[in-house]
Amino acid sequence: MSASGGLRFGFWPSTLRARLFLILLFGLAIAYGLSFTVLFVERSMSAKAVMLGTLESDVATSIAVLDRLPADQRGDLLDRLSRGNYRFELGPGLPGVPDNSSKGKEIGGRIEEAIGGTYPIRMESIPGDISRLQAHLTLSDGSPLTIDITPRPPMPIAAWLPYVLAIQMALLVLCTWFAVRQAIRPLGALAAAADELDPNKKGPPLSERGPSEVAHAARAFNAMRERIAHYLEERVQILAAISHDLQTPITRMRLRADMADESPEKDKLVRDLGEIERLVQDGIAYARSAHGSGEKFSRIDLSSFIDSIAYDYQDMDKDVSVVGLVQGVASTKPHALRRILTNFIDNALKFAGAAEIGVERKGEEAIVITVMDRGPGIPEAMLEAAMQPFFRLEQSRNRETGGTGLGLAIAQQLAAAIGGSVRLYNREGGGLAAEVTIRAN
Image (cartoon, rainbow, N blue to C red; front, side):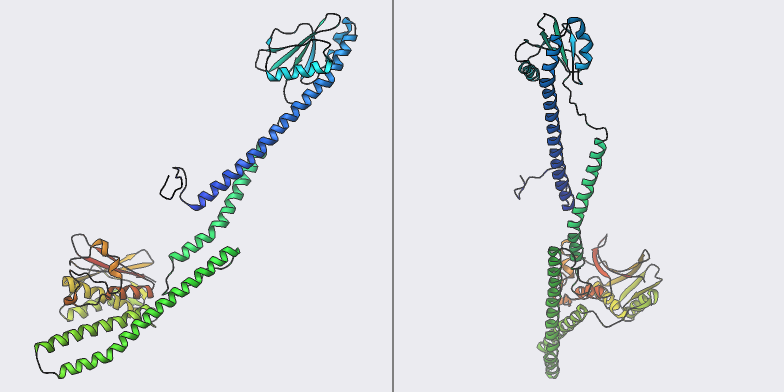
């Protein structure tokens, strides 16, 4: 027994499609087999009843006719009185063994009942490949008479019946597969829609056509997606409003701090105000990135674009370099992509002191731009959490190093807005790599 209380079998498939197919197929096949078995048994019983009825009605008449004929004329009538499953023989017949089977007793009882007990009957079974019975009796003049009985069904199975059964089983499998496909396809569509669910993107709603249950589930899913998008939009709007409203009092506090006399307390206050201001600016940037931007897609020359970013940092005496050969063009939102890469580079400079930019083309559809460093990296268990807003590692990304924990979250939001994706991973030999994948065309 499993933890859920159900039995688990080694051959039981894991997919709902296969399970439903097997259940329906086995159920219908068993029901079909039972119907065929009942029909076959009923046919055998009918054949047996016909045979016994023939023995009971015809044999008594035949024995009476043979008994009344002269002994020298009886041989002429034997072929006429014989039937498909029995025939008459003058004489003691073949040597056999006493038959005590239920079949022999039933046939012998029927013959005795038909002839009224006038001629005592002895049943024997004849050894051989074919089941044969012989009923021995003595006519009134003392002549022995043998009835050779072959109890076979008079209605054999048609040769074409196996082909009909094969066609019926094929239709059964086909109908079962079609029924399962109709039942499972809406679940597949719902699962695909759930995998592609992105409240920040306005995608087509899930189709609400089909049976009433499927349509109801699709409507519920579409309504859920709209509610999630609405909740996220409200959250971002609240963050943007708070961040925007904080700018005015922060500006007043900075002006008052600048007017104050020089002192260690003033320096600390100015640093705190600068950190608060960076937090507010990053909050506004995150809110804007969540809504995307009004920027349109345009084609850029990758070599010039990457070099311009590196040169801007080099002009500020920052150790930023481009590795490998960069060439080709890409279709993207330049300002959004620049913001993603500068966030990656700022993190690399902050925690490693240097950054390298590499560009790699994957097929004809995608371009991967990677910013690499040789800093402390991020523990594997925290790589996914590092993309969440306001995430900071206590050992390295603390208040003294600056930062609000929004840089990577902003990069992820902007990447989604330009149809790309962001990934973090630790480099071999130490360090962190942050990559963004964009469309080539």
